[in-house]
Image (cartoon, rainbow, N blue to C red):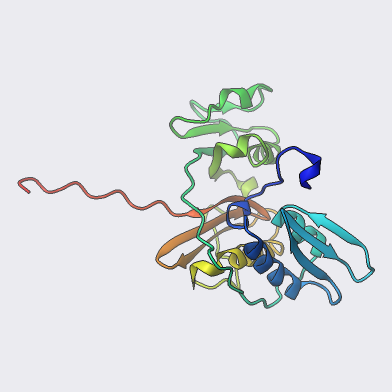
Length: 238
């Protein structure tokens, strides 16, 4: 969205690490390298432009939109160019939600059309029961406004694929912090090749901080630094 249009800028799961022009340029380079010959991807204020081989051009404001517009090969090799000043995403402090395909004791029943109004931003972990249309409920949780304060921490049910996630292929185990924007683009690229019910969990060491992407198919559940483990209590007598 341009500044003259008003309203809030477009956001998705990768927006926290793509706020600067150098960061968006690094992401553009990754997807341009994987896109069809003749496709030009360029960072602009607030987003990117994509010019296709036909000459048609489109402006997008999110990495998800960029992936759709550029139509890259999910399996293509791509380098990770640096973006000065980049940092890993912070830990995900949103309220955790576990979505169950079926019924659950003490769960919020999503068959009640008013269920989103019963999910306050803060509090203990939530359990949501979705006996009907669990995928539609998941999409609701991953869309505005619920995604801004709730994170999908668990998915229970065969409709959500295997309980044990796999790692995305072709993603390095460690990168420097200035590679994080390019890493986000590479993760998006690899996700584009996943089947709808494939569960993935991909951890990458970023200068000593573990950054984790959790996804179901192309749906990103969370992209954040892993929370530091709680400090052990001091032994008695110390």
